[in-house]
Length: 264
Image (cartoon, rainbow, N blue to C red; front, side):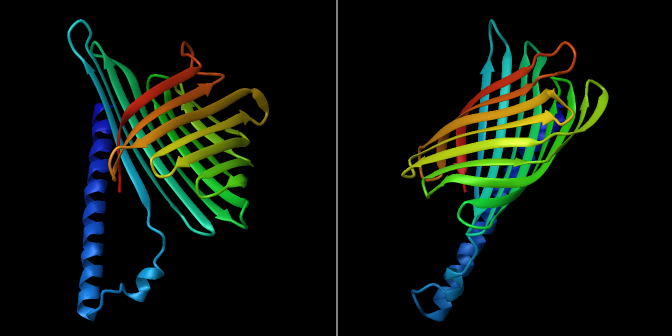
């Protein structure tokens, strides 16, 4: 598992470097075009460009040595882009930990969601998630759901939305393969504070369609504050609850992660 986490870190770093180089090249091209035109006004095409992707990557590392010997590392990547009719959101995170050379944390998670807005409030969405949790004996768990969403609040600073739709869960849990239909019910909220801070929370509930006492709940709450133009201090609390976990495993997996995030 160590090599997979290391590979994840390297891929994220390569993405940051390539994105930075691409952004610099784009800026240089614009400057050159303006200078060649002999004008201080950007080309008209600049005004019609699609909105840029907003990306962030964060790292958190905790080490103790002496009476205790622990290691806990986390990396998270998020990207989104919104325009008048479409919203794209992507995310990935990895966590690895050891306690006295015994592995006690091993997760990989990724998701993608696309929203198409019909008006200011209503939208259709398609979402997919993937999870690996070695400690909880979840070899893999994939969930997919199309559905409908509605913005109860949608302003520049505040957004509150609810979503629902049919879904499917495909997993390998404790060496057994399971596939079942699971409707998805979700809520998400975010609040921005004049560019200085950002608060968010989200919850989703996925019960098995034929047996509602077998269900999953995924929740997250977080806040970040601006340190510099590109660096934020971020703290996130995540909770993954499975009402029927693998044998000899607990229902809840809770993580509190605090670290620095770089926005680009």
